[in-house]
Image (cartoon, rainbow, N blue to C red; front, side, top):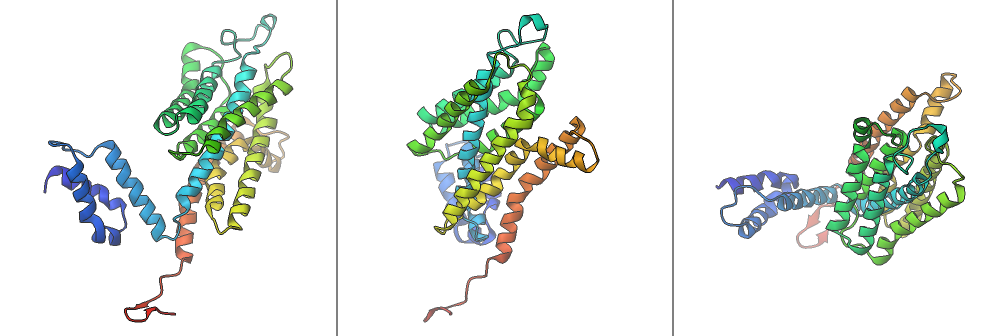
Length: 325
């Protein structure tokens, strides 16, 4: 056995044991036949393909084969939400505080956040005109740019959006990476339509100065956006379930983490209210965000596990009479 074959067999463990016994040799043989001469390690594309295939088979074995389509639906809704927020803030960033106030700014912009919001708008445009790998690369760049803002702001000593604005945007972007590689035209048009809606909302609401609006977004815009996202996801889930399609249910589960992060101000306010505080403190908001960030991603595998336990075992089958009833 060559080193390449041994490594392919290690990757094959992503598949259920029964499936490996039935088709393992065929799968490994196919990859070996297609591998370049002299290759010692599986390519990144081959490794990702094997892991994705194994995950799909495990979900089917658990009776949850509609999880992947549900996560893709959630990715579309997450990207549309991220596009709405990015367009809102991008337009708001071009109205810095008056120079007479003596407040810091990033050149002609409110903060360095304009870099991330611009990256998001480019990613949304790529989804429309170049779906697939270019669009996924654009989303990745936007997520990385958003993640890097706190460090870059510290190094350059320039203002940035607060973490309660950046963290939900990152969560939405990570989920958006699961977007279908070949979406239909209406699907590709939804994020840019949401971006136009965000820009229109900003044009209506923004007054002469935007300074301080990032604080307003924590109390007003972010929770409202999270509420709308939840309502849309639930309505889709109900409509799809009536057609015996469970994609919407899985989409709701996948979206609970970004929805919780969008609503972290409300969640922290509830905790602070129990302690008698009139308003949530920053440590309370951090604790609420950490709780959502840790518990939210665990909901999907927990739901899959519960679904597997409830899925009845296949009925015994007679070779002559067919399935036993």
